[in-house]
Image (cartoon, rainbow, N blue to C red; front, side, top):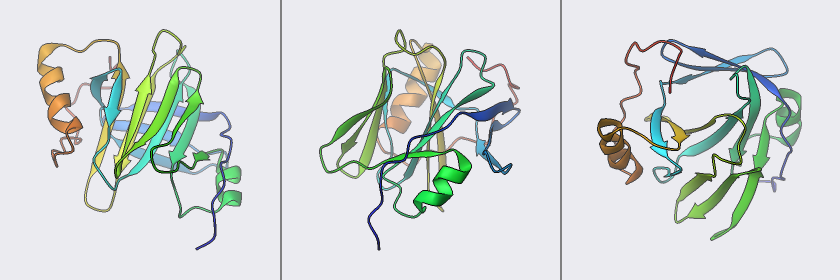
Length: 172
């Protein structure tokens, strides 16, 4: 397999719909991420072995930048045509994706951390494979019920409650 390079993301359209988040690539294709995302305070360590996508939106949530972390499957030219970025991390590596948003390797997992006082928008993390999808939103504070659920998921357990709760599009 050929080496993969870091690719800078472009601004792409985002839409919050009932049951998830729709990202519209520059080539016109839409991708649906199941949700609504679970709120997690400040940082999340994804379950091991998942494909990890980080979305940072503008304050209105109508556009943002998407970056794949350690994606070895997508060719650079495809990423460039879609507007999606990629960052490749070595073992025990860390990199700033966006001012206030860092990603780091942690074993076979990826840790995404956000200093939300430095981010003028929202930060979402999607971790998926052919078996399950997990969606998270990094927030400053979560209520006690959501905090217990987020802690269960962040420990790498196989909980997957991303079918949506009918809360509509006004999350957070």
